[in-house]
Length: 205
Image (cartoon, rainbow, N blue to C red; front, side, top):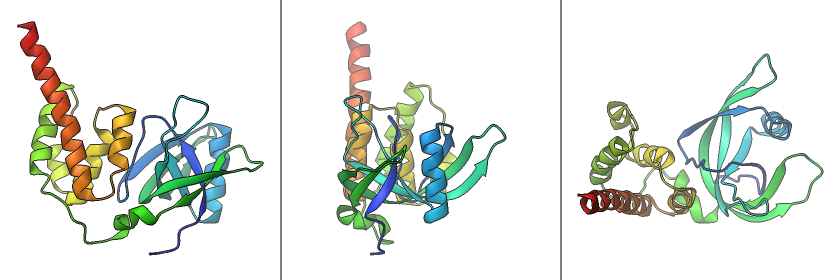
């Protein structure tokens, strides 16, 4: 496995997860994160994203390392960038620094499969069919024809990223180790919501 940095700058953001081989567009305007992005871009273009919690400035223990693949400065001082996911990480400890942004010591060992070309997975056909129903019930539009053009891993990761579920459920999906587990967990979550909707509809009749 390629040696990725043990200490990385991290952007905590509630409600946002992303995965290896997916793209995350970001609009940066806070000074601390402008500093983070500029420092990362000058160094190795690597930065981490992790979900923040609403308690004591804490964060979840698993996030994703990404590489800045597009970087543009706007006239009003914002930075518009695209982050391409590489590998997930487990946070070991926060590093004390004198910067405006936070840095963490991380470990990638549990997620080496993210870098593998050969991934074990279940056929996501059932997942996609259920996702179509779930998205429709939530009034969400998705170009399913474009989704079909993606490989199996990208299909599952894309659905996981944009699925309208809770932050805790998103984190549970992110922390699954293998792609097969991710398919299973995501399908279970969608099944729960579809069952809940159907059950509620029945009780109202």
